[in-house]
Length: 166
Image (cartoon, rainbow, N blue to C red):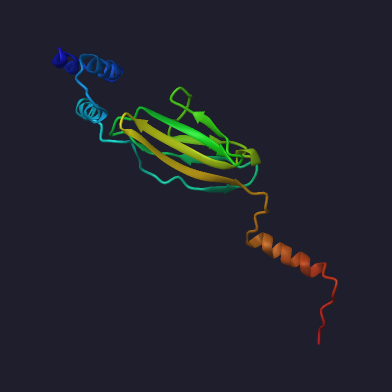
């Protein structure tokens, strides 16, 4: 019976097969069960995230984009996105049921409410892998070279002291 069940295995009925093993008394402990699942499903262990998510500093109104490149060679049961706000609350942003690209999370028109940690969690029966990045929303003006030159020129024009020419 077990040989037949293993030969008919597909991703949909893995949970049913594990329950069957439990009911038949074939799995005595978690490590044996994990070993059986590793052989049947050919998992490689916990999912791997191949990139390091980058911290972002953006101005209000900009678009933030976080990527979480999950290696799909191993079984991946879920990819979830969370936002941990500066007040400590954590909010689930995206699950497998959410429409769109599960490997990316975008925020259009960022505001100070979007500031905080963004976390991608990839998981399977063997465990979870986590990657996080921080989004900072800065209200400071962007001072590039042309802005600095303009600022220096304005300071010279409106300076209260007259330069002494000898």
